[in-house]
Length: 246
Ligand SMILES: Nc1ncnc2c1ncn2[C@@H]1O[C@H](COP(=O)(O)OP(=O)(O)OP(=O)(O)O)[C@@H](O)[C@H]1O
Image (cartoon, rainbow, N blue to C red; front, top):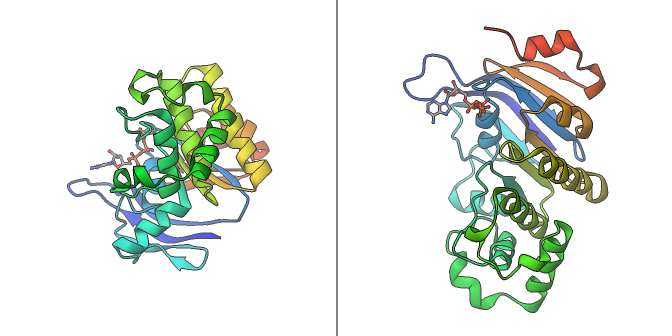
């Protein structure tokens, strides 16, 4: 479903490449957790997949379409199909929760605001149902800026639910949340994977969450894949390879 071949990225002015010759095939319905030390290349990998970061070489093919090489309009339509949860949520703080969630339907369309008047009753119902799923329906009318970090993250998840993507990418979606909220968000994402068959690829700092929820773990170190296996194959030796001491 997602096939990454020979992916390499070096940021301008950096000596070491952030990613070196990454080869990775993700099958439909897999839940992949990407682990690695800070600077290992996890964000770069995820961001190359939706072209928020421009790779230097290699190819990324999703459902038979070559992401590397897509033009701006092809990318816009791709980003409507691929859900992306950032560390910093990417919400519009001054607008109500419900409007932020409905915007998910339009992907990352920059001019979506001009569509506000065109939201249908169906859109509103679906957005409310998504908020219900993350336990925030009662806050639908509140401005996002009045919510806590954990609540904002749940709004971001509700927006992704609304988008109904077949691929969900996440860049450390739980790293700024408390343990209880983190667990809750991971359970939502696990539910999306199990019940809707969504393919998930998440960068995580937390090995325990990765082992509990993922069906496959990728370990990155120095921009290379140093582990690729099942959660139960991740033992002490493998963890040392993924998290080498200084
Ligand atoms: N915009 C940038 N300009 C220059 N170098 C960058 C940029 N973004 C990342 N890097 C470098 O690329 C390497 C990989 O960074 P990346 O953010 O992908 O790692 P990461 O594993 O996601 O780290 P973290 O867990 O801290 O988010 C690091 O050495 C980092 O300093």
